[in-house]
Length: 430
Image (cartoon, helix red, strand yellow):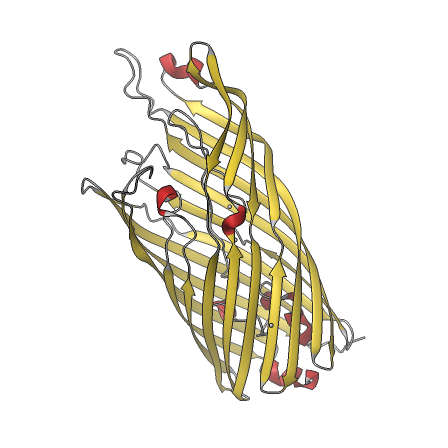
């Protein structure tokens, strides 16, 4: 049965971690992606489910959603990303990314313990990125391979509904790991020396902690309002490892060593309103803000340092990033055209976070238009959802931008497929 019909008795408003040291021969650091496609049902509606309460995964958008979910429910999702794109240098040379699918799992469960109390938990990826460029391309000194991954464990508790109101709170424990490979601009080795490519491999992991809150209000059967907040999380690597593969004459300048670095992940703020013009048809409009301005600079330290001259070593460096807050508008709809089948459509307008001066192939970001389509089914408690999203990044051209590390034009599309399956156990509240 459609979730709205089950809950109408409740009648009554921005890397995990992203670390990428840049050696040329100095060091710097880049950024990562906010991942938000945690379910097929939600993605089919462009993620516009802040007030949706369709399944346990909706606690990612707003923990108060679990206050409108009956019984015991569990949901497993696999989202696949297939990024495609081209960089064209100011000189006119074009390079395509290596197409390597990215697989991201998510797991959510919720339980309505009493008429006024619900609990839930999710294990999901909300910050991460993987991008792969040819080994010998002109931007290899910035990135060859980049892998940034976070896993968040997020238990939540919701109170209500009381006269249509639900309030919820949760705790975020976030694990982040980085695995980066890039080239070094050291030139050709001296005559007789083996050319080993001159690369650095960076790896490290860490934990960070934060919290989230959610609110929901349903004043009538045909409308529900929601608002949610996820706190900033400080992620610090204290024992990261930088392993250099360089020609023998360069080895004294680049010893293998530890590094430390810190990034503050953004606040996430969302609001949404959902309407039911019919019991089987709903529409939702959401507004999201991801406050990446918390990432204005990055300081990191080396345990042994990098040689800059005969008597000088670089031990630490601060890189100005000046990332910007960005905003999203999401519009989604769901129509249960049969008691067992639903169709979904959505569109998302997503703002750019990276200034022209710091845009590089580690994160070739830009304004995006995301369009989605989805299909769902439910039989005797079992439910399954399938969705497709086309992420169209508007072209960006940094040719002529003073200070940009590698001026040129970026054109990117990403194909995203999300598949979810779950079960709703018909368990009465205690």
